[in-house]
Length: 326
Image (cartoon, rainbow, N blue to C red):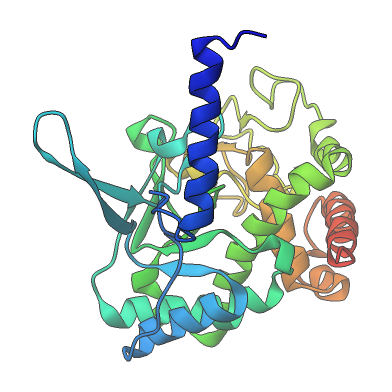
């Protein structure tokens, strides 16, 4: 059989590769990037604490969004190429939440230290290992908005694919231990809920339905769902407090729209209910904070307590199921 030139070249190449592998056991550099999330130990107390968290739990806690740089050589124009790897905490599979969310980092060492301690002592112990965030970014300020200046508000936490951002770093030092505990529960609630959305989707639909099934014509504007704007048509026709519709909170995005009655405290001429995420997170926070008896003591006398309790119990069942996951 006659061997074509192409086959001859291929055989020669394979023979050369085989000999090369036998004679040289040293692999050439792969060119792959380093582990950007790896932390090294440091004599600095805060950085040493961050290293211990990384060593023991494989969670990297940052107070900067720059993970590192890498020299990528010289490009075709003779210029040095340096790659900067950023955390990009608002990255999503379908886009990027940076359009409606932003943060400001802290440069105050004491505030950064307080944030690391808060995460280590009050957040981390209440997370299952499979819930651990890829990394944590500590921010002085975390801001959410709905593309309207009037709706910009400061948030406490954002839990995403790339990172969990914890805000209000400059406030932690002035908090009491009770306030720090409540703040940590707010962070935990966002993380727990993010996992529940994929694990217990049907159960959450039942939770939403408790308030979603309530329709009050003329009160819920433009929709047949309770997750919308509630208002009164006249200054004397006040609508119920949001608790009466099974909500623990109003929407933090619409605080400028809350007008409380001067003659009937606790009722409003106009307010917005929370959206589904805000509603669920508020109940996850309640379940992670209060026993059912404590919840009853806090809310048992308010209008709509039956709805609140129903939703509390539904989230309690989800939390119990999540705790049972190894």
